[in-house]
View 1 (cartoon, protein in one colour):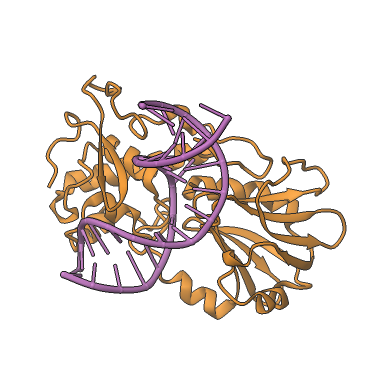
View 2 (cartoon, protein in one colour):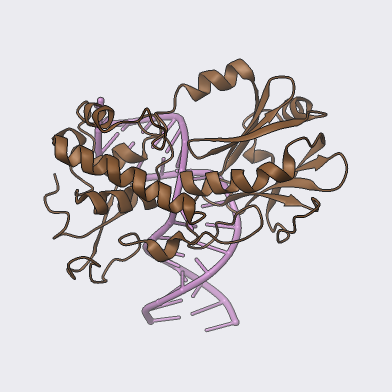
Length: 277
DNA sequence: AGTGTATCCTGCAGGC
DNA sequence: TGCCTGCAGGATACAC
């Protein structure tokens, strides 16, 4: 569920609640979310202090003392809840997978109904190596239309699949890929390399604007997503194409269509986004 | 290189 | 009410 704006919103909410707090120990309720042996994970986080909260792609990063990084991938239904932390009162987690018991009041709970998410504690060098595998952050200044056009030009992959590939661009998921392609008037199945300069520019603008607006709205809640206080993201009301199969296009009234490829729904307007492969 | 498919898991909506 | 199918903001491994 969570894409860049949802992970970013969660990080912003958790930051004031957690920075400076010390982890007493971790309780593991569902070991299948760990990407390392439970004993190694417990040892890696025990007694460490939270130095900072950051986001990379769709991951929440908890920087810990001793050059450790707690990397949380939220998967489809992952959520981090500061339970019992002074000044915070999120709803009680229903599917706790890992609880980080803090020194002093409260705990941080990784809650994940479907358990597609993952949690791991890495040392600095291992995280930095992992970090290099992600593509550029689309909201950073270094991500230019020229860069996007060049990168698209190297791939025959459908542009929707290209946008979902975290090695190529970080943080875009199925909702924002659909919205960006609609804004840029590009058909989701178009081979990436067939986009001309103007289309790449339009897509660059569209990806950045939709992500920026979604961050400002606190993300998109369709079903499950919650921020650090349990509140919903408000961008759902601004979705113009995602989930609108069978409805009239908000721009031209043509019927919105749904296409399934690479195992996932792609929503598009056949008039505004003509062509295809 | 890229695609289609399956897999991990739970819950919900809709049809009968 | 129960039982079925299909669907869901993700990431990966596999065969072709």
